[in-house]
Image 1 (cartoon, protein in one colour):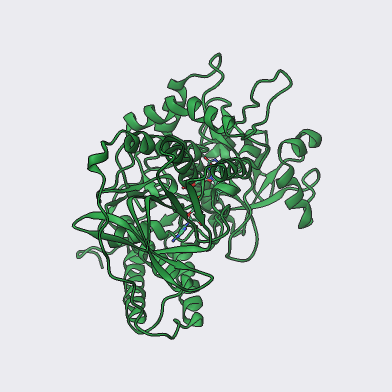
Image 2 (spheres, helix red, strand yellow):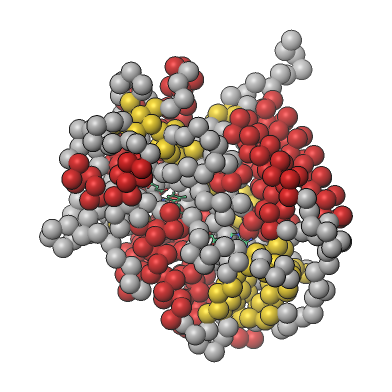
Amino acid sequence: MKHSDYLIIGSGVAGLTFAIKIAEKFPLKMVTIVTKSNEDESNTKYAQGGIAVVLNKIDDNFRKHIEDTLICGDGLCNKEVVEMVVTDGPKRLKELIDWGAKFDQNNEGAFDLGREGGHSNNRIVHHKDQTGYEIERAILKQAHRQNNIKIFDFHFALELISENNCCYGAYVLNEKTSEISIFQADFTLLATGGIGQVYGHTTNPSIATGDGIAMANRIMATTKEMEFIQFHPTALYNKSFTSTFLISEAVRGFGGYLRTKDGERFMMNYDKRGDLASRDIVSQSIDIELKKSGDECVYLDCTHLNILSFTQHFPLIYSSCKAIGIDIEKQWIPVLPAQHYLCGGISVNTNGQTSVNNLFACGECSRTGLHGANRLASNSLLEALVFSNRIYNYLASLPLLERTKSKVFPKWKDCNSENVDQTIVIKMKTQLQILMQKKIGIVRNDSDLIEAKKQIESWNAECINIQKKYRVTKEFYELRNMIEVALLIVRGSIERNENRGGFMKVNTLKTANSD
Ligand code: FAD
Ligand code: SIN
């Protein structure tokens, strides 16, 4: 059993920035981070476009960023949260810079502000097309400077420990020794990121299996708006249904055009903002175009852009395309929407508190009210920074008396010494991903949803049975979590009966009167 004052599950931007602050504030308290892969592996590391922050107060202002966020969220954002996040942005950016993160500047020494869909101004602070990599590098380095932060890499959190609606830590699997221990803590922060692997065809890396959301759901923490899946319009087209490379929206902000195979710039037919309409609209428009033409992808045309400037801004995108034989200067880039982000998640208040005492959630696994029905581009790193700071402020201000005492919890018991069969896990995962892509994609309908619900419920029951007979593995638990997250998405989609933002349902359920 390991005891710490603060247990953080996840080492992306949400988990690390909270860890740094709380560890600096309380040098005698122990801050433990468990993370299931290499310490830097996370969605954070792959963020390209940047962080949306109002810095240029001549052309831009907070009001415009707030307005853009509200329009994008299509009526479902919490306005107070939006105002809080947007106005706190500059301070949180300064902290990142103080910790050593570097962002691109123009010739005048001001930040080189990029543009993305749904933004009425250039306001995206970035580090080339590798903003997340730079942030993760800087905050990991800062976390390592702090003696009272201990990072356990390749440690997979299986279940939260709770009693009487209060969280006391987690059961954690050491992936190298297969030992399962109790990581007990006064306060636990879920910072476990996204769910992309539920779909398979996603811009997210393989760690994005929705573990935190499923764990929280199992101890009855409230989740909300799980049906709002954001599909990024321009994932690099490939024929496989696995993780796929992102072509940043900042490329369209830089002047790239979307075209059909025949060269038509179709976006103006759908929205007066054209190629820079918000993500939900661009993805839905591409979906319509592809269904109309029967084509497998649309194209992003950058051939008219200054190639030198392009390679300076987007070196990773340029080289990644080059590596698969696409010369951006001469050829259009084939692109297709892919799952990218979850707008809903574990419901939290403005201090990041979940409905379970002493359990907090931050970053992509949380639902704060910022995004509503569709997240505005580059608002998610910002949200994680602002909310990790809110959680820090809240916990730092608690009187010591309110902190919980140590309790004793039973050791983890596996039912058998034989591991769950890996082939069953792989097969069920693939079936789940195919089902989610085919039936729970950009446009949904009730009959598909009801059919999918039945199927996923039966996989869920099968997993519960398997767990009764075998020793659990990380891969099995990820599958269990993905199935639970899929169920939340499907149930939310069935319940929602209006199309908003990234949610579109064509109702094909037969009524009692129809023939
Ligand atoms: P993550 O960074 O995903 O970190 C989650 C952590 O939890 C990881 O360390 C993971 O290993 C760990 N973990 C998960 N489950 C467990 C478990 N069971 N046990 C132990 N550890 C666990 N947003 C923007 O604002 N701007 C952008 O430009 C941008 N570009 C993006 C580009 C790409 C390709 C992708 C995929 C996302 C992008 N996003 C962008 C979204 C943004 O990167 C993420 O929403 C954000 O980084 C999430 O941070 P996080 O800390 O919540 O989660
Ligand atoms: C991108 O660079 O297109 C991704 C930005 C985001 O997800 O906010």
